[in-house]
Image 1 (cartoon, rainbow, N blue to C red):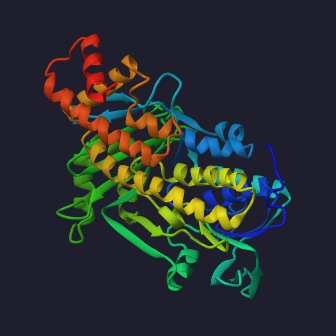
Image 2: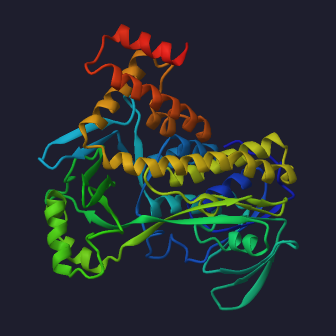
Length: 450
């Protein structure tokens, strides 16, 4: 890890020692900053808590890039499991496979708590951080840069700093202070879907119950079940379902009816989760929310990172990766503006927001797309895109690889994808039967005007 002294005279208070908070602190420390890291929970490395509701997270190239900058890519990668494709479980028992990228390209499943602990260890190793656990932010004096916090002993104290970074998640108290002061507008959207999680255990022999190289999905009218592989032979399963209508968790439905209908809709899943009855009984479904706000900063005093500024829905596996890419962009701006925070925070807010708005829009659309992944028309489109990528890689990259295996700005990706969608629609209408490679490439080049 290459270090600089661009921020050596700056004291930052980073609120939130979750994934993005820790990684932000590491990037700031790389440039010589002193950091006070405030976290309301106990130290995850010593406490028996999960570190978040979802235990399985997906890392892509954008996330690994941010980890590499602070020297943690190899350490984190050693604890991950690759996922190379989507495995679509059809009602007739067959499985359709859809590759995410080319040979060697994968998403990587990582345990949230394990990753958070690696990042916390990295923070301690810098020797530049004061970590305060079980410390609740009570109030932010935006002008003075003073935070009033309550520590584990119940006493109220003040933290003085040059700059405050709010990385305290979707329900950010730092964002709340900015909104209360009238310097920020926020839009919190609650989706018309809910979810709950259950674990698919290893087989009796200790192996994986499903192919561990894939993300397994069961699209059904009753909802969408997604299973991600973990190290150790387990899968983290998530059931998404609509709030409206006669859903599995409709308020008036009995537990017995819920279990019966779950088993009927997701028979294979029910067989893989022996304790599905108990899980359904005790696991309250959670809402899915998204956050947009603007601006993300107040001069050089305060800036938001990660979910505090742009919580997105989980349907493109990009929530954590987008937060980690925030760190990459912030790090680049520190160097571009030679540590001038009065220019860094405004530029970060201005440049990053269009990208996070774009991935939120894409994630919302992808939920509908995943739900259609069992449709023959969806598979036909998927195969056509991959064929174009093989035929003319200099002119065509499918959406998923653009998002997960590249580093194009996300707002540019959505513009490119919109044009590609128009072309795919035209090709599918024009060619009921697949044309020759030469004919297909020529037609696409004419549509692209290249």
